[in-house]
Image (cartoon, rainbow, N blue to C red; front, side, top):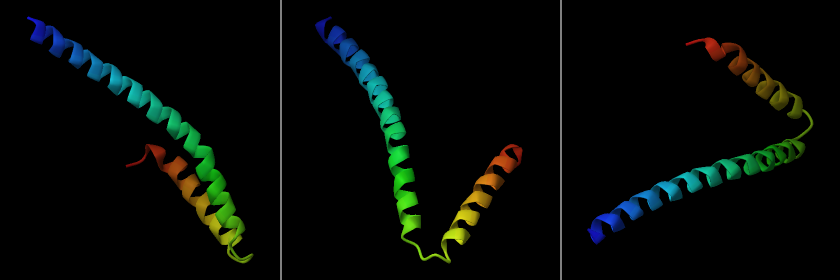
Length: 73
């Protein structure tokens, strides 16, 4: 009987650890998004002048196509 209760407690402990881990991963995701954007902007700043408009237009068109084609196949 004690073994059953111990395994039940371990089961619920695993579920609680899983939920806490998911919450921490979501928080870390939201903390890493601004760092990633800052890194990308810094990288674009180091590019030669003639490449900056090409990169910006390419990323803008890609994002626009992803938004427009959201409902497509």
